[in-house]
Image (cartoon, rainbow, N blue to C red; front, side, top):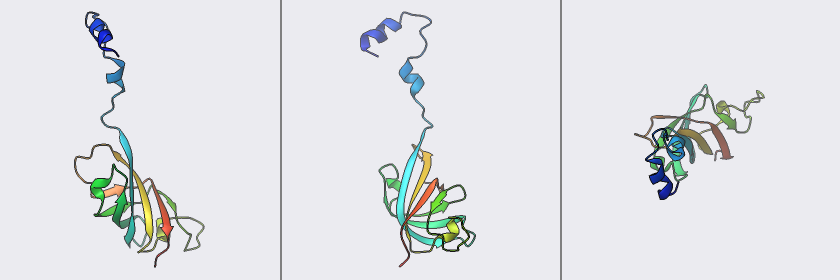
Length: 127
C-alpha cells in the first residue's frame, strides 16, 4: 500500500486493517535442517542423539550441539538393515551421517530439548 493510499484510508471509518497486517502470522513454522553424526540410537528406534555439524541458516543456534531427535512421526530414508520390509529408525547405526528436517517455530524462545523430526535421510553408512 502506498503512503498516499494509507493517508486516504484514515478518514474511512469502516476501512478495517490493511491486507498486509492480516497476512502476518507470528506463529509460523519453518524448516530447520540439521546434519551430523548419530551418537546414540534408542533400541526401539523412537529417539536418536545427533551431534550437529552443520545446519541451514535458521537452525544455526543448534550448530555444534548434541540434540535429541524424536523420530516417531518422521519419514526415515535409510537402508533396511533388519530386513523387516520397513524403513524405520531401528535401521540406523551410531556413526552414520544423517540430515534431519524438523518444522519448528520461526522464532525459538529457547533451544528445545527434544526436536520432533519430519524426515531423516542417511548420507553414508557407519564407519
